Image 1 (spheres, one colour):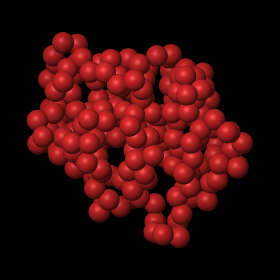
Image 2 (cartoon, helix red, strand yellow; image 1 turned 60 degrees about the vertical axis):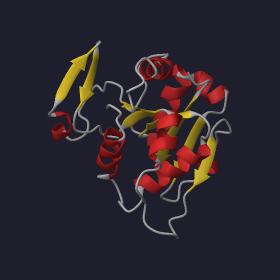
Image 3 (cartoon, helix red, strand yellow; image 1 turned 180 degrees about the vertical axis):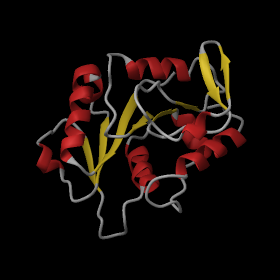
Length: 189
């Protein structure tokens, strides 16, 4: 099992990121103390606007092109090397301590797990993404795809599958594509 997991989030809005930061600070303080939190900023947001020195920052330049979820996610995944990655949207909040450790433990409990998503409370993702499910050993497996609202990615899987496809722009379809690539490599969701 790897030593650590990095939390990677993408954000362009200080107020939303502040709520996410507060939940990480409350429930996953080790990630902050060990400098394993990475925020990829867009929309003109700068870390100076936030006043936190305890995160790793990367400012995405909108001068290059319009916002791209896969491009920004890949940037965070690269910056967090060699850690496993919890790729999580900035509008998600942790609700209890130990979530990252629990996800890591579950991800490594079965070598066939390629992508792991935590349980969400509230409305999330596309309901069609969960139309085909199987249950095994207390886990629910999707035979379709997972929404990348929050996903645990083992570094070994990232190294084997590669990055998200940056030909997808904005939001959407990049997570579907990545799930299919992971499944074709023999892993489960």
